[in-house]
Picture: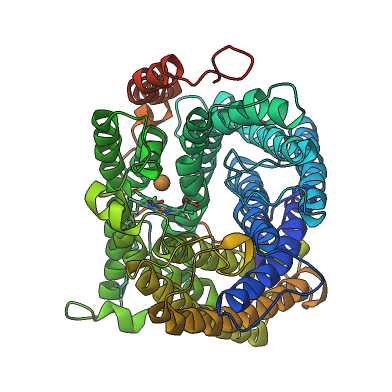
Length: 550
Ligand code: HAS
Ligand code: CU
């Protein structure tokens, strides 16, 4: 596209998105350092200085990378995507989003302060009976409420677009941002409920105990869709941005929308696959939720299919022959493509591992072992995060009026090679050690942690080697981000938005029927959770004050 006809994201919306990215990349730097320290501690060759606890840095790592980096990056990206494809935000929409940004930032600072004071070393899952200072829970609540404001700006912008363009399907990136926002709002109700109704009153001393099973169930009602809230922005880039970057077409607009709707429907009623070993939930309901988990694999398989189709049709249009000839003609020296592509590759074993986890019998082998940590470092910390890095390379210069230079592009590819190498060592060793029974969340030395079996030690060392390589990757990434935000030469960088190959065929309007989709979402949630919840509450333990806990 010629730069003079290129529609840029409005500067004011750019500032809003960039504010989110500053917080995200500060989080990357802090959380990455904590991660390095953990692998060193686990190797048994390093002791944390100044009385800092292992669980304290593990909490920093999980909260700052899993919750803060992701939420800020995703909201910034989605706001930019909506501004680009549905038009500049109105003043009111932008103000709502800024309120969201500040609430999230204040909440983050509150929670971070409590973690640094060692008053909230409860990990990112904050399972009861681990208890944090009330300010930690209030901080997390502000992050969630803030994200609802960001989400509201997206919903309002979508409604306004639909009003102005009756009878037309919304722009694909706006549609996708909306689905992910709806998914997020429905999911966060669960975590807000456990924090506000159980953990906060308990931490303030208003109640003496809480029902642990109810709190874990509410957490995982949220925790599984949380991982798809992370994944879907990566899918936005895979479906819409990557085809444009390589010079090809989106395989099918309708297929992309369909897969996003399936994520909305099937992401939430599956939380029990994190609780398969928990007593107090009837196996029949666990079975149902495992089936629903396998249903939510389908939109990922559709995504893989669609990506292969995009790559192959582009390759054939360039004259590629044979089963894998298309691989040769892809633009390997373009970081905007190569970096997310490495993410896609890693998602193949990552997804296979997920299906292992979801299979009840196999889950007995890997549950609470470091295999699970290996799984989410391939999914979130490789497939998703490398895609977010790939987005950063064009979006940040686009928003700051700069360009990605040849030198930075090269460094970005080197960064991804470091990342992939470090993660292969670290995540590979985690999977292997997990199969040998090495527990997750354990420093082996503190707080009576499990004794270290000799056969795990080589894997712990491999994790530390991988962690150190990854830390170099983090330094490179932070360096590239600072360059693109403040120092790269002025210019215009493209915001790549692909076109569908099947544009002649009209996208059916049924995808925009929110009464239908949200209705089915709610029915599925009620189906999967109502009876188990009644069971839990009926059989709840009696608290010391003589009434039932919940
Ligand atoms: Fe998971 C635990 C099951 C996906 C993250 N998961 C976790 C935890 C996290 C996490 C953070 O059922 C730990 C939570 C904790 O702290 O306790 N997960 C699944 C399943 C999937 C899955 C079935 N997980 C993810 C994603 C995550 C994520 C995505 C983050 C972003 N997971 C589980 C289960 C547990 C679990 C259990 C609990 C374990 C326990 O006991 O505690 C599926 O959604 C995966 C489907 C994916 C695919 C892959 C499709 C491939 C694509 C790439 C195509 C590539 C191309 C390039 C085109 C089917 C789309 C090709 C080019 C060539 C040249 C070949
Ligand atoms: Cu899950």
